[in-house]
Amino acid sequence: MSLPATVSALRDTVLRMFPHRAVPGLIPVGTPGPDSPVLLTCSFTLTLRRLQRVLAGRNVWLLAADTHGINVWCAAGGGYLTHHEVIAAIRSTGIEELVDHRELILPQLAATGVEPRRVRQATGWESRWGPARLEDLPAYLDRGRRTTRRDRRMRFPLWERLEMASMWAVWTALGGGALFALLGGWRTGVGVVISVLLTVGAVFAALPRLVVTGHRRWLTYGAFAILGTGIGAAVMLLLGAPTPRNLALQAVASVLAMAVLSIDLAGTTPWYPSTINTFRNFAHIDLEPERCTFAGDCVQVCPAEVLRLDGPTRKVVIARPDACLQCGACIVQCPSDALRFRYPDGRIIPPAAIRSTRMNMLGRRTVTVEGHDPAVTPGSSDTPA
Ligand code: SF4
Image (cartoon, rainbow, N blue to C red):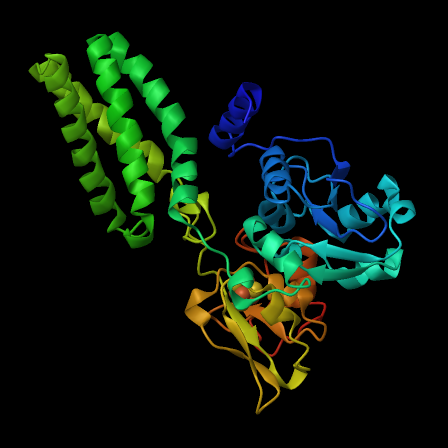
């Protein structure tokens, strides 16, 4: 990778918390022709760069919808990637003149926002769900555009967690390093930078095993503050400045770093309940079996293998309710409105409300549902305020 590309990739990684908009439109990869696949994506620079990298050596058309520089999952959950953006991308890029087919491959994580039937109604294009993760695209294309169970399941591997860590750690370390260098000299600043980088990295590396919500989260943060203090003290020893004042400053810096991290560490990703946003268990996925027509769209788009097709009954079953991320994709995609969210008190949030408000773990997290009648039916007028 060239130096400018490396700098650009580092910048996008460290700043991934913020939208970074690439020019939306049609991007040829290789030398695509009339029969080449057309893959829809977002206008987030990091995603586009990675897509071009994993698809290198192939001939495909990338159709980058204007998602305001937000990645696919967040844009779809937040209402920035819907069928409207997909329809606009098809109509505005001239792709219809360049290919002799009408098949669009949608990223699975767009299912919280994009309704394929609306794309079909408006443009005549048929949509097909691709894998949840872009690195699975080459195998998916080689397989004849069929997803596997592995393709459909969202993963959060170590290297990606460490990328997330960099997003928090770099700014916390630089800000803290500068502040504590002013308070205790350059050695203290260096100690703070090193201890914050290592401690935040350790938090994210261990994240799947950590308690980061509820009262016990303070034990987690306390333990890592002690670890950070120890690392800072070791650096002070190496630099020959382990004075009581410097060690005290390292302890204060570690506590502050963990305080900053605790603001919304868990909300960094939909995999974990948000620390400050306590609406994680606002509602549960709920199935009305009588409405289920065994279409299977929900199983196709669920990133957590919560749903399963039950052959003997020819119905969908909620096989792993506790694994539900509350992304809402299955609800948006069900053609017969058989899935919905249900509040613990029995109130039902109709699918129409989910579709129109983008209420899910990535977008809006609460809606007001009038009344307390559990018999409120999907698609009724009992929609959010
Ligand atoms: S079952 Fe839960 S995780 Fe799966 S698609 Fe539906 S809302 Fe998302």
